[in-house]
Length: 134
Image 1 (cartoon, rainbow, N blue to C red):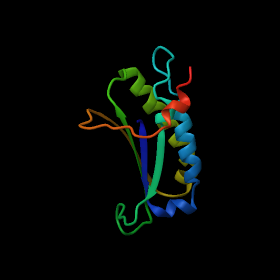
Image 2: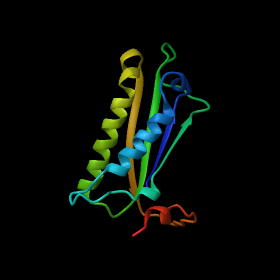
Image 3: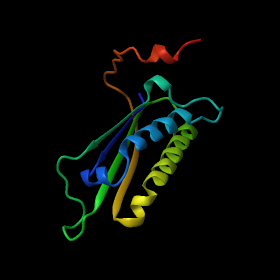
């Protein structure tokens, strides 16, 4: 962890580069620092996944409104400054990415960051060792 999941209305596939957004947000997460200039997120734990909603209804039926929901889930233990830095950095990256879309259509964008106590948390893969070298 941290995992950033993006859910969006499917008309956006034709209007913006979602793979580029995923890469930009992953790079943003990797670059976030805390108050001691230490990385907030481990490189091997960063995940950004985007899914078009199979079905959706946004606002009224009179307009073709789009929507993007971004949810960053992270484990507890980071300082308030680190969390704010992450939120500010991600919000800036999202604003920059969607600026051209916002200029030509109605779109709602929500970014939420959740932090919580895991009831169960197993990490079964082998990505972290790639980035934890000496």
